[in-house]
Image (tube, rainbow, N blue to C red; front, side, top):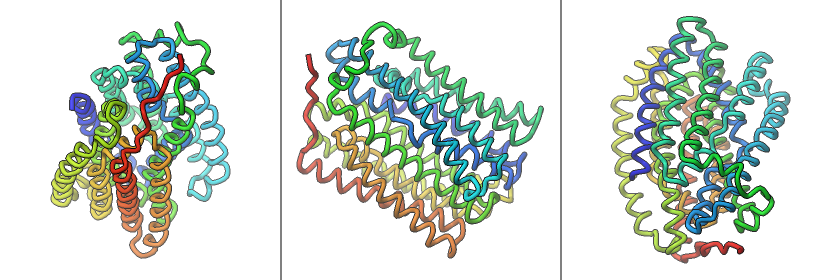
Amino acid sequence: MQNFSWMLASRILAAVFSLIYLAIITRTLGVSGFGRFALITGAAQLLSNLLAFQTWQIIIQYGVNHIENDDETRLSRLYRSAVLLDAISVVIGIAAGALILHLFAEALGMKPTLARATLIFNIIMLLAMRSTPLGILRLRDRFSLAAAADSTLPSLRLFGAIVVTFVHPSLQGYLIAWAIAELLSAAAHWYAVHRIGDFGLLFRNGRNVSKVFADNPGISRYAWTSNFSQSLYVSAKQIPLFLAGGLTGTAAAGAFSLASQLARSLTMVAQLVSRAAFPEIVRAVRKQGLGGLGGMIWQSLRTATAVSIVVFLIAVLLGGFVLEAVGGVQFASTYYILLWLTAAACVDLATVTFEPSIMAAHRAHLAFMAKLAATAMMIGAALFLEPIMGANGVAAAVLVNSGCTAILLGMILAYLVRRGTADPKPMIAN
Protein backbone atom coordinates (compact mmCIF):
# COMPACT_ATOMS: atom_id res chain seq x y z
CA MET A 1 0.00 0.00 0.00
CA GLN A 2 2.90 2.35 0.68
CA ASN A 3 4.37 1.59 -2.74
CA PHE A 4 0.97 2.01 -4.36
CA SER A 5 0.29 5.34 -2.61
CA TRP A 6 3.44 6.91 -4.08
CA MET A 7 2.66 5.59 -7.56
CA LEU A 8 -0.99 6.66 -7.28
CA ALA A 9 -0.01 10.21 -6.34
CA SER A 10 2.17 10.39 -9.43
CA ARG A 11 -0.52 8.95 -11.68
CA ILE A 12 -3.24 11.26 -10.35
CA LEU A 13 -1.04 14.18 -11.34
CA ALA A 14 -0.47 12.53 -14.72
CA ALA A 15 -4.20 11.96 -15.21
CA VAL A 16 -5.08 15.58 -14.46
CA PHE A 17 -2.33 16.93 -16.69
CA SER A 18 -3.20 14.50 -19.49
CA LEU A 19 -6.81 15.69 -19.52
CA ILE A 20 -5.54 19.23 -19.98
CA TYR A 21 -3.03 18.55 -22.73
CA LEU A 22 -5.42 16.17 -24.51
CA ALA A 23 -8.03 18.93 -24.51
CA ILE A 24 -5.45 21.36 -25.95
CA ILE A 25 -4.34 18.99 -28.72
CA THR A 26 -7.79 17.73 -29.73
CA ARG A 27 -9.21 21.24 -29.97
CA THR A 28 -6.16 22.48 -31.87
CA LEU A 29 -5.77 19.64 -34.37
CA GLY A 30 -9.39 18.52 -34.67
CA VAL A 31 -10.66 14.95 -34.92
CA SER A 32 -8.68 13.96 -38.01
CA GLY A 33 -5.48 15.74 -36.92
CA PHE A 34 -5.66 14.19 -33.48
CA GLY A 35 -6.19 10.83 -35.18
CA ARG A 36 -2.89 11.23 -37.06
CA PHE A 37 -1.17 12.30 -33.83
CA ALA A 38 -2.59 9.26 -32.03
CA LEU A 39 -1.50 6.91 -34.83
CA ILE A 40 2.07 8.25 -34.79
CA THR A 41 2.52 8.15 -31.01
CA GLY A 42 0.67 4.84 -30.73
CA ALA A 43 2.75 3.19 -33.44
CA ALA A 44 5.96 4.50 -31.86
CA GLN A 45 4.94 3.15 -28.45
CA LEU A 46 4.01 -0.19 -29.96
CA LEU A 47 7.27 -0.52 -31.88
CA SER A 48 9.42 0.63 -28.94
CA ASN A 49 7.81 -1.89 -26.58
CA LEU A 50 7.45 -4.77 -29.00
CA LEU A 51 11.02 -6.02 -28.56
CA ALA A 52 11.98 -4.28 -25.31
CA PHE A 53 12.87 -6.59 -22.42
CA GLN A 54 11.06 -6.01 -19.14
CA THR A 55 14.30 -5.36 -17.28
CA TRP A 56 12.46 -3.89 -14.30
CA GLN A 57 10.85 -7.28 -13.65
CA ILE A 58 14.16 -9.09 -14.14
CA ILE A 59 15.93 -6.79 -11.68
CA ILE A 60 13.28 -7.29 -9.01
CA GLN A 61 12.87 -11.03 -9.57
CA TYR A 62 16.59 -11.76 -9.15
CA GLY A 63 17.89 -8.68 -7.37
CA VAL A 64 15.95 -9.45 -4.18
CA ASN A 65 18.18 -12.45 -3.54
CA HIS A 66 21.41 -10.48 -4.04
CA ILE A 67 20.27 -7.73 -1.68
CA GLU A 68 19.32 -10.30 0.98
CA ASN A 69 22.81 -11.81 0.63
CA ASP A 70 24.46 -8.37 0.54
CA ASP A 71 26.17 -9.36 -2.72
CA GLU A 72 26.93 -6.15 -4.62
CA THR A 73 29.08 -7.93 -7.20
CA ARG A 74 26.24 -10.09 -8.48
CA LEU A 75 23.82 -7.19 -8.17
CA SER A 76 26.13 -5.05 -10.26
CA ARG A 77 26.32 -7.73 -12.95
CA LEU A 78 22.53 -7.91 -12.94
CA TYR A 79 22.27 -4.14 -13.44
CA ARG A 80 24.88 -4.18 -16.18
CA SER A 81 23.16 -7.03 -18.03
CA ALA A 82 19.86 -5.11 -17.86
CA VAL A 83 21.48 -2.07 -19.46
CA LEU A 84 22.99 -4.33 -22.13
CA LEU A 85 19.56 -5.79 -22.86
CA ASP A 86 18.19 -2.26 -23.22
CA ALA A 87 20.95 -1.39 -25.69
CA ILE A 88 20.22 -4.52 -27.73
CA SER A 89 16.53 -3.64 -27.70
CA VAL A 90 17.30 -0.17 -29.05
CA VAL A 91 19.30 -1.51 -32.00
CA ILE A 92 16.83 -4.28 -32.85
CA GLY A 93 13.87 -1.98 -32.28
CA ILE A 94 15.15 0.66 -34.70
CA ALA A 95 15.81 -1.95 -37.38
CA ALA A 96 12.46 -3.68 -36.82
CA GLY A 97 10.59 -0.38 -36.79
CA ALA A 98 12.13 0.72 -40.07
CA LEU A 99 11.35 -2.65 -41.68
CA ILE A 100 7.75 -2.79 -40.40
CA LEU A 101 7.01 0.75 -41.53
CA HIS A 102 8.62 0.13 -44.92
CA LEU A 103 6.51 -2.98 -45.53
CA PHE A 104 3.21 -2.18 -43.82
CA ALA A 105 2.89 1.63 -43.60
CA GLU A 106 0.58 1.76 -46.60
CA ALA A 107 -1.58 -1.07 -45.24
CA LEU A 108 -1.91 0.88 -41.98
CA GLY A 109 -3.04 3.95 -43.87
CA MET A 110 0.20 5.89 -43.28
CA LYS A 111 1.50 8.18 -46.01
CA PRO A 112 5.33 8.52 -46.38
CA THR A 113 5.47 11.71 -44.29
CA LEU A 114 3.45 10.07 -41.51
CA ALA A 115 5.58 6.92 -41.62
CA ARG A 116 8.81 8.95 -41.45
CA ALA A 117 7.55 10.91 -38.44
CA THR A 118 6.57 7.64 -36.75
CA LEU A 119 10.04 6.17 -37.29
CA ILE A 120 11.79 9.25 -35.86
CA PHE A 121 9.49 9.28 -32.84
CA ASN A 122 10.04 5.53 -32.41
CA ILE A 123 13.82 6.01 -32.29
CA ILE A 124 13.44 8.64 -29.58
CA MET A 125 11.07 6.39 -27.61
CA LEU A 126 13.64 3.59 -27.75
CA LEU A 127 16.46 5.85 -26.58
CA ALA A 128 14.28 7.06 -23.70
CA MET A 129 13.51 3.61 -22.24
CA ARG A 130 13.16 3.78 -18.45
CA SER A 131 12.66 0.12 -17.50
CA THR A 132 16.08 -0.48 -15.91
CA PRO A 133 16.17 2.62 -13.65
CA LEU A 134 12.57 1.94 -12.64
CA GLY A 135 13.50 -1.60 -11.68
CA ILE A 136 16.43 -0.38 -9.57
CA LEU A 137 14.27 2.16 -7.75
CA ARG A 138 11.52 -0.37 -7.06
CA LEU A 139 14.00 -3.01 -5.95
CA ARG A 140 15.31 -0.54 -3.37
CA ASP A 141 11.75 0.36 -2.33
CA ARG A 142 12.36 3.95 -3.40
CA PHE A 143 8.91 4.37 -4.89
CA SER A 144 8.83 8.02 -3.82
CA LEU A 145 11.75 8.87 -6.09
CA ALA A 146 10.28 6.72 -8.87
CA ALA A 147 7.00 8.61 -8.57
CA ALA A 148 8.80 11.95 -8.74
CA ALA A 149 10.67 10.83 -11.87
CA ASP A 150 7.44 9.54 -13.43
CA SER A 151 5.79 12.91 -12.82
CA THR A 152 8.26 14.65 -15.10
CA LEU A 153 6.73 13.13 -18.26
CA PRO A 154 3.15 14.49 -17.93
CA SER A 155 4.47 17.77 -16.55
CA LEU A 156 6.79 18.27 -19.52
CA ARG A 157 4.09 17.20 -21.95
CA LEU A 158 1.69 19.77 -20.54
CA PHE A 159 4.35 22.49 -20.63
CA GLY A 160 5.28 21.52 -24.18
CA ALA A 161 1.65 21.47 -25.34
CA ILE A 162 1.08 24.99 -23.98
CA VAL A 163 4.28 26.33 -25.60
CA VAL A 164 3.52 24.71 -28.97
CA THR A 165 -0.05 26.02 -28.94
CA PHE A 166 1.20 29.59 -28.63
CA VAL A 167 4.34 29.29 -30.80
CA HIS A 168 3.60 26.77 -33.59
CA PRO A 169 0.30 24.86 -33.17
CA SER A 170 0.89 21.94 -35.55
CA LEU A 171 1.21 18.17 -35.56
CA GLN A 172 5.00 18.43 -35.93
CA GLY A 173 5.23 20.84 -33.02
CA TYR A 174 3.39 18.54 -30.63
CA LEU A 175 5.51 15.58 -31.72
CA ILE A 176 8.70 17.53 -31.00
CA ALA A 177 7.37 18.47 -27.56
CA TRP A 178 6.51 14.81 -26.85
CA ALA A 179 9.97 13.67 -27.93
CA ILE A 180 11.76 16.18 -25.69
CA ALA A 181 9.54 15.15 -22.76
CA GLU A 182 10.45 11.47 -23.26
CA LEU A 183 14.20 12.17 -23.27
CA LEU A 184 14.11 14.44 -20.21
CA SER A 185 11.94 11.95 -18.31
CA ALA A 186 14.51 9.21 -18.96
CA ALA A 187 17.25 11.53 -17.68
CA ALA A 188 15.20 12.16 -14.52
CA HIS A 189 14.91 8.42 -13.84
CA TRP A 190 18.65 7.88 -14.14
CA TYR A 191 19.29 10.89 -11.91
CA ALA A 192 17.04 9.28 -9.28
CA VAL A 193 19.19 6.12 -9.49
CA HIS A 194 22.24 8.33 -8.96
CA ARG A 195 20.57 9.86 -5.89
CA ILE A 196 20.21 6.47 -4.17
CA GLY A 197 23.82 5.57 -4.93
CA ASP A 198 23.20 2.61 -7.26
CA PHE A 199 24.41 4.31 -10.43
CA GLY A 200 28.00 3.63 -9.40
CA LEU A 201 27.30 -0.12 -9.27
CA LEU A 202 27.17 -0.09 -13.06
CA PHE A 203 30.88 0.74 -13.14
CA ARG A 204 32.46 -0.54 -9.89
CA ASN A 205 31.82 -4.29 -9.70
CA GLY A 206 30.74 -7.33 -11.65
CA ARG A 207 32.48 -6.57 -14.91
CA ASN A 208 32.18 -10.15 -16.23
CA VAL A 209 28.59 -9.86 -17.41
CA SER A 210 28.52 -13.39 -18.82
CA LYS A 211 28.47 -14.73 -15.24
CA VAL A 212 24.96 -13.32 -14.81
CA PHE A 213 23.55 -16.65 -16.09
CA ALA A 214 25.33 -18.58 -13.34
CA ASP A 215 24.42 -15.94 -10.74
CA ASN A 216 20.72 -16.08 -11.62
CA PRO A 217 19.47 -19.55 -12.67
CA GLY A 218 16.66 -19.37 -15.20
CA ILE A 219 17.17 -15.69 -16.00
CA SER A 220 17.39 -16.24 -19.75
CA ARG A 221 14.03 -18.01 -19.95
CA TYR A 222 12.44 -15.50 -17.61
CA ALA A 223 13.73 -12.56 -19.68
CA TRP A 224 12.36 -13.94 -22.94
CA THR A 225 8.96 -15.00 -21.59
CA SER A 226 8.41 -11.71 -19.73
CA ASN A 227 9.44 -9.86 -22.89
CA PHE A 228 6.99 -11.75 -25.07
CA SER A 229 4.25 -11.40 -22.47
CA GLN A 230 4.68 -7.62 -22.27
CA SER A 231 4.90 -7.33 -26.05
CA LEU A 232 1.55 -9.06 -26.29
CA TYR A 233 0.11 -6.79 -23.59
CA VAL A 234 1.25 -3.65 -25.41
CA SER A 235 0.07 -5.02 -28.75
CA ALA A 236 -3.35 -5.82 -27.32
CA LYS A 237 -3.66 -2.20 -26.15
CA GLN A 238 -2.41 -0.59 -29.38
CA ILE A 239 -3.75 -2.91 -32.10
CA PRO A 240 -7.39 -1.76 -31.65
CA LEU A 241 -6.35 1.82 -32.43
CA PHE A 242 -4.76 0.72 -35.72
CA LEU A 243 -7.76 -1.47 -36.54
CA ALA A 244 -10.07 1.49 -35.98
CA GLY A 245 -7.85 3.75 -38.08
CA GLY A 246 -7.19 1.24 -40.86
CA LEU A 247 -10.80 0.08 -41.16
CA THR A 248 -12.65 3.35 -40.61
CA GLY A 249 -10.16 6.23 -41.17
CA THR A 250 -8.06 8.71 -39.18
CA ALA A 251 -11.10 10.57 -37.83
CA ALA A 252 -12.36 7.35 -36.25
CA ALA A 253 -8.85 6.71 -34.93
CA GLY A 254 -8.87 10.11 -33.24
CA ALA A 255 -12.25 9.49 -31.63
CA PHE A 256 -11.21 5.98 -30.58
CA SER A 257 -7.92 7.25 -29.18
CA LEU A 258 -9.56 9.87 -26.95
CA ALA A 259 -12.01 7.35 -25.53
CA SER A 260 -9.13 4.91 -25.06
CA GLN A 261 -7.05 7.51 -23.22
CA LEU A 262 -9.85 8.15 -20.75
CA ALA A 263 -10.59 4.46 -20.22
CA ARG A 264 -6.87 3.71 -19.92
CA SER A 265 -6.78 5.57 -16.61
CA LEU A 266 -8.43 2.48 -15.10
CA THR A 267 -5.93 0.17 -16.78
CA MET A 268 -3.26 2.44 -15.37
CA VAL A 269 -4.59 1.85 -11.85
CA ALA A 270 -4.39 -1.90 -12.47
CA GLN A 271 -0.78 -1.52 -13.66
CA LEU A 272 0.07 0.53 -10.58
CA VAL A 273 -1.29 -2.10 -8.22
CA SER A 274 0.55 -4.82 -10.15
CA ARG A 275 3.89 -2.98 -10.15
CA ALA A 276 3.60 -1.92 -6.51
CA ALA A 277 2.72 -5.45 -5.40
CA PHE A 278 5.25 -7.32 -7.52
CA PRO A 279 8.30 -6.90 -5.21
CA GLU A 280 6.23 -8.00 -2.21
CA ILE A 281 4.73 -10.97 -4.08
CA VAL A 282 8.22 -12.09 -5.12
CA ARG A 283 9.40 -11.98 -1.51
CA ALA A 284 6.28 -13.80 -0.27
CA VAL A 285 6.54 -16.56 -2.89
CA ARG A 286 10.21 -17.09 -2.01
CA LYS A 287 9.30 -17.59 1.65
CA GLN A 288 6.03 -19.56 1.57
CA GLY A 289 5.35 -20.58 -2.03
CA LEU A 290 2.43 -19.54 -4.19
CA GLY A 291 0.08 -21.86 -2.34
CA GLY A 292 0.21 -19.53 0.66
CA LEU A 293 -1.07 -16.53 -1.32
CA GLY A 294 -4.56 -17.85 -2.02
CA GLY A 295 -6.22 -15.76 0.69
CA MET A 296 -4.54 -12.54 -0.42
CA ILE A 297 -5.45 -13.14 -4.07
CA TRP A 298 -9.10 -13.84 -3.23
CA GLN A 299 -9.35 -10.78 -1.00
CA SER A 300 -7.82 -8.51 -3.65
CA LEU A 301 -10.20 -9.95 -6.27
CA ARG A 302 -13.25 -9.12 -4.18
CA THR A 303 -12.06 -5.62 -3.34
CA ALA A 304 -10.99 -4.76 -6.88
CA THR A 305 -14.25 -6.11 -8.32
CA ALA A 306 -16.28 -3.85 -6.02
CA VAL A 307 -14.18 -0.85 -7.01
CA SER A 308 -14.52 -1.74 -10.71
CA ILE A 309 -18.33 -1.84 -10.48
CA VAL A 310 -18.43 1.62 -8.87
CA VAL A 311 -16.06 3.07 -11.45
CA PHE A 312 -18.04 1.63 -14.36
CA LEU A 313 -21.22 3.22 -13.01
CA ILE A 314 -19.40 6.55 -12.81
CA ALA A 315 -18.32 6.15 -16.43
CA VAL A 316 -21.92 5.47 -17.44
CA LEU A 317 -23.14 8.61 -15.68
CA LEU A 318 -20.29 11.04 -16.46
CA GLY A 319 -18.53 9.57 -19.50
CA GLY A 320 -20.36 11.65 -22.09
CA PHE A 321 -19.77 14.86 -20.17
CA VAL A 322 -16.04 14.18 -19.81
CA LEU A 323 -15.66 13.37 -23.53
CA GLU A 324 -17.31 16.65 -24.54
CA ALA A 325 -15.37 18.62 -21.93
CA VAL A 326 -12.03 17.29 -23.15
CA GLY A 327 -12.50 16.89 -26.89
CA GLY A 328 -15.53 19.00 -27.74
CA VAL A 329 -18.96 18.19 -29.12
CA GLN A 330 -17.49 16.25 -32.07
CA PHE A 331 -16.28 13.56 -29.66
CA ALA A 332 -19.67 12.98 -28.00
CA SER A 333 -20.37 10.10 -30.39
CA THR A 334 -17.57 8.07 -28.79
CA TYR A 335 -19.59 7.54 -25.58
CA TYR A 336 -20.32 3.87 -26.27
CA ILE A 337 -16.70 3.25 -27.30
CA LEU A 338 -15.73 4.64 -23.90
CA LEU A 339 -18.14 2.28 -22.13
CA TRP A 340 -16.77 -0.80 -23.93
CA LEU A 341 -13.20 0.20 -23.15
CA THR A 342 -14.06 1.08 -19.55
CA ALA A 343 -15.65 -2.33 -19.05
CA ALA A 344 -12.45 -3.94 -20.36
CA ALA A 345 -10.35 -1.81 -18.02
CA CYS A 346 -12.57 -2.82 -15.08
CA VAL A 347 -11.93 -6.50 -15.85
CA ASP A 348 -8.18 -5.78 -15.90
CA LEU A 349 -8.46 -4.00 -12.55
CA ALA A 350 -10.48 -6.80 -10.93
CA THR A 351 -7.86 -9.42 -11.85
CA VAL A 352 -4.84 -7.23 -11.17
CA THR A 353 -2.93 -9.71 -8.97
CA PHE A 354 -3.26 -12.70 -11.31
CA GLU A 355 -0.32 -12.07 -13.63
CA PRO A 356 2.25 -10.81 -11.07
CA SER A 357 1.54 -13.88 -8.92
CA ILE A 358 2.11 -16.18 -11.90
CA MET A 359 5.28 -14.28 -12.86
CA ALA A 360 6.62 -14.46 -9.29
CA ALA A 361 6.12 -18.23 -9.39
CA HIS A 362 8.44 -18.46 -12.45
CA ARG A 363 5.53 -19.40 -14.72
CA ALA A 364 5.84 -16.46 -17.11
CA HIS A 365 5.50 -18.77 -20.10
CA LEU A 366 1.98 -19.72 -19.00
CA ALA A 367 0.98 -16.05 -18.74
CA PHE A 368 2.40 -15.52 -22.23
CA MET A 369 0.36 -18.37 -23.71
CA ALA A 370 -2.80 -17.04 -22.07
CA LYS A 371 -2.23 -13.56 -23.49
CA LEU A 372 -1.40 -14.95 -26.92
CA ALA A 373 -4.71 -16.82 -27.05
CA ALA A 374 -6.63 -13.77 -25.77
CA THR A 375 -4.99 -11.48 -28.34
CA ALA A 376 -5.93 -13.85 -31.16
CA MET A 377 -9.52 -13.84 -29.89
CA MET A 378 -9.51 -10.02 -29.84
CA ILE A 379 -8.30 -9.70 -33.43
CA GLY A 380 -10.85 -12.24 -34.62
CA ALA A 381 -13.64 -10.49 -32.73
CA ALA A 382 -12.62 -7.07 -34.10
CA LEU A 383 -12.62 -8.30 -37.70
CA PHE A 384 -16.03 -9.93 -37.15
CA LEU A 385 -17.69 -7.06 -35.26
CA GLU A 386 -16.30 -4.00 -37.10
CA PRO A 387 -18.44 -4.47 -40.24
CA ILE A 388 -21.51 -4.72 -37.99
CA MET A 389 -20.77 -2.13 -35.28
CA GLY A 390 -18.00 0.05 -36.72
CA ALA A 391 -15.51 1.43 -34.19
CA ASN A 392 -17.79 0.17 -31.40
CA GLY A 393 -17.08 -3.35 -32.62
CA VAL A 394 -13.34 -2.81 -32.23
CA ALA A 395 -13.95 -1.52 -28.70
CA ALA A 396 -16.10 -4.55 -27.91
CA ALA A 397 -13.23 -6.75 -29.08
CA VAL A 398 -11.03 -5.12 -26.42
CA LEU A 399 -13.50 -6.36 -23.79
CA VAL A 400 -13.28 -9.84 -25.34
CA ASN A 401 -9.49 -9.68 -24.90
CA SER A 402 -9.71 -8.62 -21.26
CA GLY A 403 -12.33 -11.26 -20.47
CA CYS A 404 -10.38 -14.08 -22.11
CA THR A 405 -7.16 -12.98 -20.40
CA ALA A 406 -8.86 -12.89 -16.99
CA ILE A 407 -10.41 -16.35 -17.43
CA LEU A 408 -7.21 -18.00 -18.66
CA LEU A 409 -4.94 -16.37 -16.06
CA GLY A 410 -7.47 -17.20 -13.35
CA MET A 411 -7.49 -20.86 -14.36
CA ILE A 412 -3.67 -20.98 -14.37
CA LEU A 413 -3.42 -19.27 -10.99
CA ALA A 414 -6.08 -21.47 -9.42
CA TYR A 415 -4.18 -24.55 -10.57
CA LEU A 416 -0.86 -23.24 -9.22
CA VAL A 417 -2.32 -22.23 -5.86
CA ARG A 418 -4.13 -25.57 -5.50
CA ARG A 419 -1.05 -27.58 -6.33
CA GLY A 420 1.40 -25.22 -4.62
CA THR A 421 3.78 -25.65 -7.56
CA ALA A 422 5.75 -22.41 -7.27
CA ASP A 423 9.40 -22.89 -7.97
CA PRO A 424 11.55 -23.10 -4.84
CA LYS A 425 13.92 -20.35 -3.88
CA PRO A 426 16.65 -20.23 -6.58
CA MET A 427 20.00 -21.62 -5.50
CA ILE A 428 22.79 -19.15 -6.10
CA ALA A 429 26.19 -20.58 -6.95
CA ASN A 430 29.04 -19.68 -4.64
